[in-house]
Length: 319
Length: 191
Image (cartoon, rainbow over all chains, first blue to last red; front, side, top):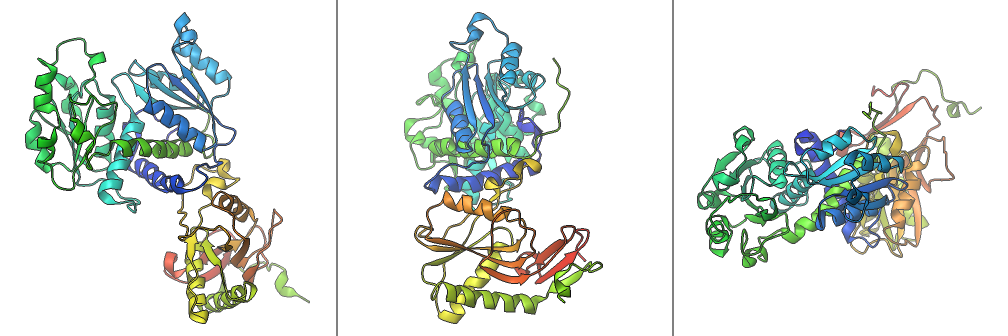
């Protein structure tokens, strides 16, 4: 394992499997009377959130607390950021307070990478702009493995599974991280989206591309729906929400074309009625609630593997 | 007088226990557990990964043979409770699997291959504390090699093996390593 988790592409297959196997063992903790381990006692994890988030922040907070770490939550609203403090100065402040790990969510792509050059502790990317969200990809891979390979699949990858990622790939950090991680783990990933919602460089990604969702459905083991990120849309990417929904939304009729064992995923928050119909989101194939529970477990695994062992050798930190 | 208690130089690669001796030691421990717990009522065996787990299963099978009693058997991973985590890169976790019914009110016998500093057992006692409240906790080990760093003592010992701290004791079991043997070496290499 490296010191930081910035990109899902930094993880080798062995690293990714170690995280999934660790998460599998930690998942049993949820059934126990005391859902807490002493492993990170005395270590401090800072949640540095420049963008709104419900599940990711709470999930990281729960994960760190279950490992007995001290958690400091920082949100840009109501802080000195509102007075114009830069990311670097905020980072150095946190460093001076003795943060062993910084979990960062930022609107700018590359923010986590920059931060890693300024602080001594581990940096965990919890979403940077439209770039990456590696722990989301890890919890998705964990959810897929548990559902389709069983809970005893220690050491197993996702070899041979077909995953179709549908929708707003252009603005999605979840899609990029998932393509990188799932292909590392051996899955075949296909992106299904309108041409306007695919990034220019998609040809260099380790995945296939299709403009036709309906032809991909019968051969998919997993369908991952992405949120249409209207807050990031500065131009007209499709004629109307209604038309998008008719061509790329997952409704009951489309779900019926999936193979019997296939699952439907969504990283949340959902736009019910846009990319996913309510009856699909609430069906037995949907893993949306499971993904949230698995998120805590997976983030515990990542925090343990980055902070639980020997300190990483000191590197030259650029000031 | 007691030459065996002084670690002898030049016993690198020496086999301390062979398969037959391991079998006899486990048979004796199984009898001792039955004796000490008055017939094994309310006993559960928890092996500490990796090699404590097959040892616990073997003891449970022996007890089943002798008394026709099915002793619940499980595993207890202690990694997250260790005091030396910060001295090594983060380790992979083992499995904790409790028998149905848990540990509350039971006599838990912890099973491990080698008792050395006692730190693993301390971690196991902490881990157990988070899982419930046993009526009593006992410890069974195949080899006690001395050099305790904590006030911990085994209740059942397969073999007391005086060692020097330079020496390394290797326990191999058929379930994990394809053969049963206990050997000792000077440099950590398997003979």
